Amino acid sequence: MDWGLQNRLSRIIKPNNGKGVMLAVDHGYFLGPTERLEVPRKTIQPLLKYCDSLMLTRGILRTSVDARFPVPVVLRVSGGSSIIGEDLSNEKITTSVKDAIRLNVSALAMSIFVGAKNEHNTLVNLGNLVNEAEEYGIPVLAVTAVGKELEKRDARYLSLACRIAAEFGAHVVKTYYCEDFEKVVNSCPVPVIIAGGPKLQEREALELAYNAVTAGAAGVDMGRNIWQSDYPVPMIRAVRAIVHGNVKINEAYDLFKRLCNENPSESTIARKQTKNTTKKPKKKK
Ligand code: 5RP
Image 1 (cartoon, rainbow, N blue to C red):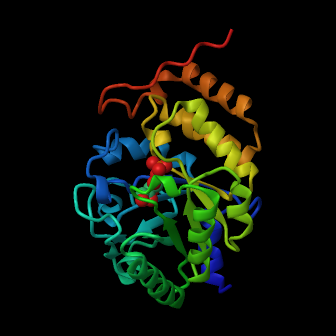
Image 2 (image 1 turned 60 degrees about the vertical axis):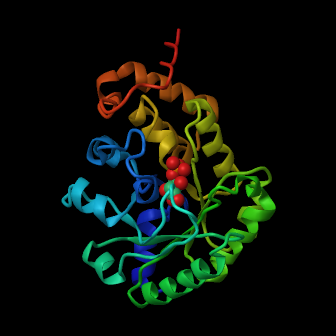
């Protein structure tokens, strides 16, 4: 691996343990002002120091993240359809590698839609993006999106999608956790990280992260299960403890509850945007 590419990748997946915590805040690129990400700066700022890298679009990077804060950036460069449009899989590369270099990013991210109408186009886009990004030593994260076809979220389908992404040259693959996740990881020769998916109760989300990492995931690229929690800072710190601290589910959840009770003002700093949906965890006796 070229030095520059290896160096960039090691900002995202830490070389000491092969793991990373990526904070996903790219949802607006097809969902618009997603709940609790309406004012991105407010959501992102308190979480920045707890993530290894930040995944987002150039628009939100430029407007909502302090350029002086040294967080490695994973730039989403694909898009072109919205949740109310006809076909979510109809994506193209929308941000140039030149602009990504100007933004000093550590990796590029794009979605592939295996099994969808635009499978071919998105896979060819991935191949072309890897060709171009490798010229400058920039790694590519392939997001294996399932869109509306949630029934395909099983090990057979996700192994297929992840393996194809790796075959096309992706340096990291993001997918969903599923039963028999070991199969997905073992048949993919590059690091696999998991998305969190729609908001769960905090304990369940921690369980998801723990199960994925135990099955061999190189970490998480989590969004809604962190910043849609009423306690986003305790949540990212608990996820971090699982990914980097090897803690088990109960320990991580205890940490989450302790942090919620210890520092409610810090915990709720980003919660001023919309109504609360999460129950306050019980105080530990
Ligand atoms: C959307 C994405 C998101 O970054 C991804 O879904 C992670 O966020 P969440 O944990 O909220 O699912 O790539 O295509």
